[in-house]
Image 1 (cartoon, rainbow, N blue to C red):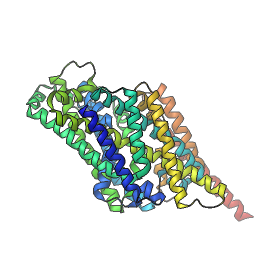
Image 2 (cartoon, rainbow, N blue to C red):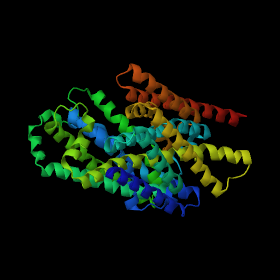
Image 3 (cartoon, rainbow, N blue to C red):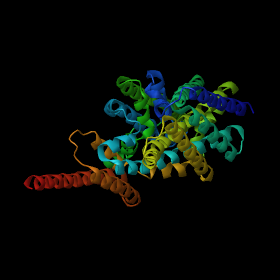
Image 4 (cartoon, rainbow, N blue to C red):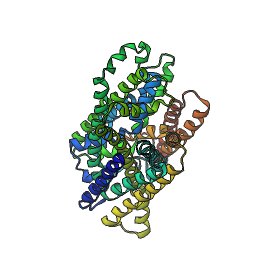
Length: 466
């Protein structure tokens, strides 16, 4: 009951923070981008906490337990690298453009049709990801307190929806800071307890091949495929881009994203270490993903065990709020509001824009809850989220930054269709589905873009001759 009481108090505190910050929200920018006023600390921790989800703790430790360091390829190494590269390559440029969502980039460069199609690809991934995290919350809370999983899922969905609905990105960022600190404290407490017990010495008994970062039985292409999905796929994520857009300055956008990525890797090394140690002191676990929770129960006193429980819950909630707000922004800002403006033949008022965004978050939050409740497992939801693919979006995104303007509406639309279809078919039939989809998407963009250029040149000559 002590853990349950602490969790309920923690969730109530999150909701109250959302209500407090809601008093400062008057416009769409205030709600979606915290008034573009995130300072370095809030921005850095928001990037870190948004990306550091439950599987970064639980799944990474379990995979390292089972396979060695290579089990941590995706989390924390590949995703951490993705965030750092995002900071160096794109964050400044995106912030300088003054966008509201990533779909705005597609509209400015390619037109409304590409913007809408990008939304169609981005939103389901975010909602399914939010559902996966809500489901994970239910399983964690159920394991820690004995609460029925369905009840825990409903509690999680209600709490995160309420504080995201009322507080927007500023509330999310403040709670991300709180959640990030609790997460670091919880993992650090467990790591110190394990080391203090003397278990660090067992690393000497770990076979050398389990320290390899790259699988020795994979080809170069297999290794590239394994890294490409999390690294390249992250560049187009609205959850990550929104933090750069909300930064107070271009410099903060860049270095907070880089800092958040480095923090992600640094803190992510703790589950990696604990997974390696667990493989020696707790061999033969039927469920390797339970290694962190079992270590916490074995090594931590009651008070620190509650802190650790809060750390796992924080890892979940900090991802759910960002996913709901990001997907709501794409639906409201890029689809619903333009349609409302056209129907009214006038611009929707600032208050109307704000409430349209809140309504979109509410609807998607209910949808995420229903998906979480109906799913059989977290893995089922994560697999569904990943299956949409980002190959076409990646190519269209990269060419959107080119000042030459090569490739237009039809090149972008064809690339998005081919990238999505190629990934689905490749996932069933090819050993390197993502790399294949990226290669085909690039080829289609170049070919159709060249055809568009030739057509425009021909039309220009005909007009000049006339």
